[in-house]
Image (tube, rainbow, N blue to C red; front, side, top):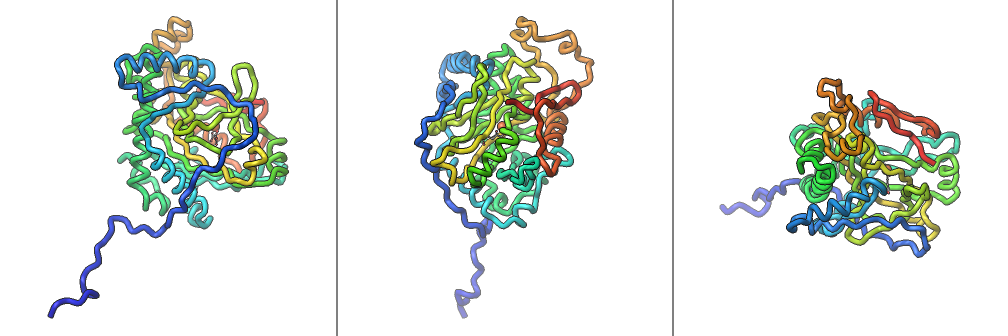
Amino acid sequence: MAPSIADLPLPVPAVTKSIELNSWARPETTKEELDWAPLAEIDLSRYDEPGGKQELAKQLYDAVTKVGFWVVVNTGIDDERVLRQFSIGNTFFKQPLEEKRRYPCNFAEGEYFGYRENSRWIGDTGVKENVEMLNIPKPIPQLADEPRHEIVKENWEEIASFHRDLHEKVARKLFNLMSIILELPEDYIYNLHAYDAKSDDHLRYMIYNVRTKEEWDRAQAYSKGGHTDFGSLTLLFSQHVAGLQIRTPEGEWKYVKPVKGGITCNAADTLSFLTKGFIKSTIHRVVTPPADQIDIARLGLLYFSRPGDNAPMKAVPSPLLDRLGLLTEEDQDTEAPIVTGTAYVRARVKDVHYKTVLTKREGTSFEFKGLKVQNYYD
Ligand SMILES: O=C(O)CCC(=O)C(=O)O
Ligand SMILES: [Fe+2]
């Protein structure tokens, strides 16, 4: 007798998806006239043209040495893929707290992979942080055992290819342009951040949950949160809810304007250490959104690149830095003890995040094995 339909084996999909994605679209930009920072735009479609890299390196020079923030356009990463990542993030943050809490960041060890909850009090203000985030490690064999939330597992192939493309099509090119500026072999800076080597790089979904103006103001009166980023390079997908400000070389705070199809980039502390302060780690903060956006959750998609286990935190042997008189005898001593990128970054993450109440950091600094940064900027 022929088998009935009920007896036939069902086709088994590769991954059974149980979490439906809440699709997300960019909110309208603010109608308020804000004081926007003028940022250089680096057109990465020119990277492979003859002489293109040299031209882009010239354009990037001022951005990395004076401003510290710039925008890249024509990266070759389709907006459709970007919006899918925002949608995954958006869906994750709407999941029950028990699910989000399944894999928390292990701040006791300075580890930043996993979920960061918005549970910490801001000093004695009676207001809590409104930021939640999920940090996803690189999809490389050395990090395959890092735990993954269900939504990350279900969308792993898509997340992994986005993660890799972001590094390959954007971060790698920027690191190479920096090597050109520094007159180093073209892959020198990249190799300190190589994708296939173990590091605390992560793709981040981040949300500033809605809170009242009164709560924003109370939190901001306590501390406006001016800071520099811990690693080497931060990539920030176009963020329509205004709030991010940078401090200009003249000491003024200016807003970062979203650029359609663009990614805002900033250099951070470890890149500044590696270049003896030549590359600028720019001070920035996120302030109360304008009145016409205060009721919109500020969803973010970012990539943070950090020097890894194999990257010595030692000044790079750049002929340019040498001519500028930035390299000391100690920098050129090959026997001197060195700390790795991962060890530095973890010490910094632990110092900032391993606490239940966020306290004022004005006038304080952080130092690890001779690498020193200020904790707070007005
Ligand atoms: O959300 C933003 O626009 C920037 C966030 C930021 O500065 C950070 O996470 O370090
Ligand atoms: Fe930051």
